[in-house]
Image (tube, rainbow, N blue to C red; front, side):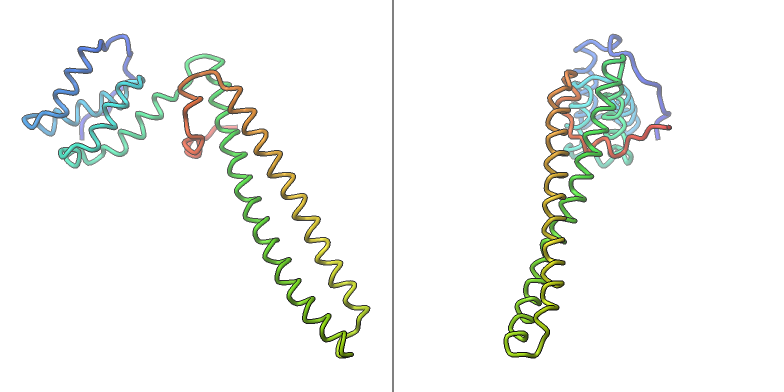
Length: 198
């Protein structure tokens, strides 16, 4: 594997330099060492053009010759996303909050679905108990407690729905508050792999 390099300064790379790197990547005559050197450079060059070029190379017939290409693409995306000022730091953290809210909302959706199924099953049981009570095989007073449990589950469903709606509204508000273009267009799922030390 090519030696790891530090983050590159985008000002050191003119469009002509990127064209030269693209020629090396897509040339059938380039050595594996050259491919690896270019991929390592692109992975550490925080510009959308460099990351697009690296991503395009993943579809190349020669992509398999760079065994760590997938890692380079991921690292390149992380390098591109790194905040460079206070506003970007705040918006990068906002993306993390959005990702967490989306994950929490998904968990609540699962709870809501599970509660809905529990209610449906309880209603089926209640129907059977009501039929048995009608023919004297079950105490009709006990039906009140059973239907009260169903009502509690319905109230819980309403609470879950309200909480999901609130989290979705927060996500929408936070998405609209982001002004940094590369963060506005980023899938918040990317942030699952980003962690802060408390």
